[in-house]
Length: 197
Image (cartoon, rainbow, N blue to C red; front, side, top):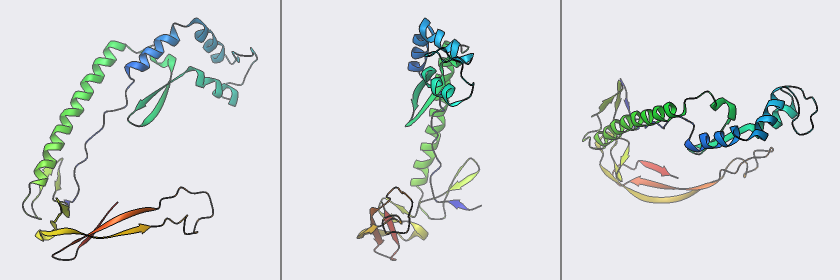
């Protein structure tokens, strides 16, 4: 079995509705105007004009946004139809969230301890077992070239500019510029080079 030269990944908390999501739900659900507008919309009536609209059509879907609750998970914005929260036992759900987050923390503590074990390995061929996989040293650790037990010091070599395909004229469609500068470090013993963004 091949030794992996990267760390096992820690896991993120799963996406769950937040306390603020439930607070917003209660505000919306207890507002008779919102409930009335939503009931009309569900039946295919535009709540603002009282005209019939096609269920699933553009107008219908645009109005649906008025009944959605947005919430952040990490850096991602999610939204949920507010009545979807009506049938959730809020207290039980919050208890489940705490339990899931605690279990995630325990797994991440194990992964963190495995990463510490990996960093303490002495030889390139040494490894730590985790989840049926072998994990070993990265090529460079603490500015030392550890590959094949070289132990040379990684020293600054140069900076280089990377020009993306869009900026050098190879793309005709609109593009997002990916130009950047990176640094190259070189092992003072064997000449191995590694770039760092």
